[in-house]
Every structure is written in structure tokens, then in C-alpha cells.
Image (tube, rainbow, N blue to C red; front, side, top):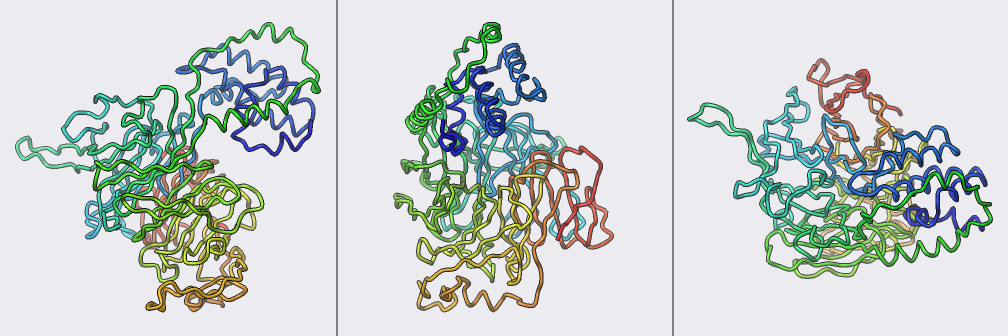
Length: 596
């Protein structure tokens, strides 16, 4: 057996590969080498156990017997750990800053994907600010003060269930919502002119259902002389499937990885695949115990690899679906993708759609209209090794440093964050590369904002750490200049400020170089959670001087404008930085530690 045929496989293939091997074969494989032992423990054995667990509830006795088998490999493989592996489907990662966090609630299974969204009653006037979060399949609204203020975080009394516009509960409608149909994505609906002036939310669920939600705030009932709780009202539904009912097809399931909105359009990136079989598989563990472990050379893994590739290629499809928010009667546009999409982004005030997928050229660009979508074309320098883009972001609308209409930031699984100028040729659009010299943890999320719109925040995959870079510092050790031979390009001759003029050896625009301070020595910094969370940072969002982030247990707000002496709830002082928090209160309270 050649090592390259097994160790270089993408992780998605391990689940199918494990279905062709019995547990005794996996044990024999684990005893062949240290690398194969880790492969079996981390991928093949969990996938095998998961395939034996049938829906809706796994057989705990069977799992216990299989755990005894795995005890031959690793005594730390406990029943509790196996119970976590018994989920029939792996949790999807969703991109952009569109994920909802279960505040005050610890993640119960792999389907709870943290995400949140800032919300305002009147976005133009900014009357009061709110933070919308989720608790599994329901929504919550929190009131937050303006950045730099002493106003404390406070929950807004809202009805727990989402109701339809007619007044009936959405869960009691003809297409009943499953109580375990967790919310996986959340965005603000855009206006037809591209501005994010709407107060409606759009959420995506694990089943593939997308709902447009209108927030009705609590009101004072004059007759009863009491406050009436607010409501989350469903005003529209969308589905990435060809059927209007996402549960109509019982043979396939659709999972939405990401949603985005712009110019009155709703874009969803989804994956369709066969549903796991509900027929319990026979497991005769007594016979397996009595059966001698086969020799490693008798396991034909190469044939299993070929069969698993054919199964995945034939059964899984990836799609981009575009719905019109202003004309619901229009048929949705659909375009199939060659690889799995993780993130999407509609460029504000533009018709450009950016899609982050997996592969050697994971970043793609397309032009959208209400009735058409151009074919996706790859942009950026092709990678030497395949990677995935888990999050996409654009600069704030008034950023003087980066052009918000033509700039895209992407967070890669290979730990880097790239900045692209969409005015440059496709394979020369990459202008900046941000890396942490002390960590190669994957980047799960990215956001841009802060002072002068020059701060870039990247959420790490481990230890709840946030990486920060200031693009105004040209001497930052975390900033790598990407060489290019592109000549100066001017897509708008009448507008001198939109000219992209990269020199022959580097691709920094001259107008940006004027804003960079060559005398500064900032090298970037990393923020660490005070509670020693091992969770990734699933979502990030800047709000003027404040940065919001979420892990699988809590939401954190970091305010650089909170003055010394403030003692708001959840506020901790360190080096003049205010810190808010609400979520699970495990561990001792601590300071939000920074590392330069």
C-alpha cells in the first residue's frame, strides 16, 4: 500500500472510506505505524462509529461495544467521546460574519454554529442598537449601548417562538419546523439600491430553509397598563432546493453553508447529498471479538479509495442559489459549483458576488443581475496546496484606506488572510497577505474596520484568539507584500482616486502608501479570551471602536473607547481596553489578555 494514496486524501473522503472497512480492519491498520494510528483515531474510527449510529437516536449499547473495541487502540476513547462521534452528519462551517451564537447556552451538539448580527431600529438615525443572537432554533435580542458609552448590555423581552405574519406560530404551519433545526447563518436583508438600510433579518437553518424575519419591539399596552413582549415575525421563506418545501425530497438533504445579501438579492451557498440510511446496520460484536485480527497486507485500501471517490462524486452536488427579495415571483437562479462553497459575499454598492470554496483556486467572482448570473471565474494566485476559504469580508463603506467597492478580504484554512483588489487582472488581484508568525492555526473568520477602517481582525481556529493588524503600519512583520508584474490599471479614467497603480515589484496602490506611516513599528497583536476557551472564533464584526466576536460559549465585545473607571456589567479593564461579555460563565473572570 503506497502511503501517498491514503495520507494525501481530503478529509471528506475518510467517512466514505470507513464504510468499506470493518472495525477489526481499522484496528489492524492502526497497528501498522504511528501515522496510521492517528489517522484511525482522528478520522476513520469516528466515521465508522458514526455510520453505525442510525437516526433518530444511536444505539448506546452498540456504541459501548464498539468503544470496547477501540480500547485496543486507545484507552482514552471513552463512551462519552464516542457519543459525540455518533452524529450522522458533520457540522458545516459557514462563512462571512453570518453566524449566530447560543448566548447563555453551551453547545450541545455539532450543529450549533455560533453567529450573531448587529441590528438597529433605524439604521440611518441609529436610534438604538441591538445584538441578535440565537439559542439553537430560536432568536434572542440584546440591547447594547453606543461604542464608548457606559450603557450596559440588557436582554430585550421577546416571545421565544418565531411567528408568521398572520399571527400563527411558524412552528405550527403546514411545513412544521423541527425543534432541532438549528439556525446556522444570519444576515441583514439589503435594500434594492444595495444599502443595508433594512431592519429585516434573513436566517438559514440546518435543513436548508431560509426565513426573512421582521423584529417587532416590545410595546406598552395602555389598557392593560403593561409591556407586551416583542416578536420575531416571519414574512417570507426561501429554499435552495428545487422544491419550495425543503423537506419534500426525503432522499437528499440540503445544507446551507453561507448566505449574503446585496442589491435586493439573496445568495445562498449550499450542498446537496443523500440522507443517511435509517435502517440499522447489524453489528455482531461478539463474533468480531472472537475473530482474529487480519494481517495489514490483506486490507485492500486502494480499491476502497477508488470506490469512495466514485460514491462522493456521484452523490454530492454544490450550488449557488440567487433569490430576488423585491420580486418573490421570479424563479431563483441556480449555478452548480465544482467544489464545496464555504462563504459568500455580495460587494456593497456593486453587482459583484465573491464565493469562497475549496481547492487550489478557491476564490471566485461573478456578476449578478436580478435575472442572470455570469459564470464564476477564479481570481488570485493559485495555491501550491488545496485550501478552503471560511470567511469573506469587505472594508467599511467610508474607509479612506481600502476601496470598499473593489476590495475583498478572505480567511483561509491555511491560516493566512488575503486582501484582493478586484480591479486588477484575475490572477494578479492579490495585493496583501496577512499572517501570524507565531501560529499556523486556520483562520475561521475575518472583519475589517476600526480606526480609519484600517484594522483587520482574524478569528483563529483554536484558543478563542483574535489576530489584529493595522494596515497603516507598513513595517508590520505580519504584513507580506505580494510581488506582481501587473501594469497600472485605471478602470475609471475620470476618477483619479480609483486608479490602481501598483509598481512593478509590489502591488500597493500609491494613494494607500501615502497613508501608511513608515515610522511606526507595530507588529500586530493577538487577543486571548479570559476564560481559556478552546473554541474557534466563529464570527467577527467591527462597530466603530468596538469589535464583537463569538465562540461556542459566549459573545465578547471589546471597546477601545471605554474610558478608565467604567464599571459596567461584564467590563474588565486592561491597558485601557473595555471588555463586555455575556455567555456561559465557566471559569474565573479574567482580563482580556493581549499579546504583542
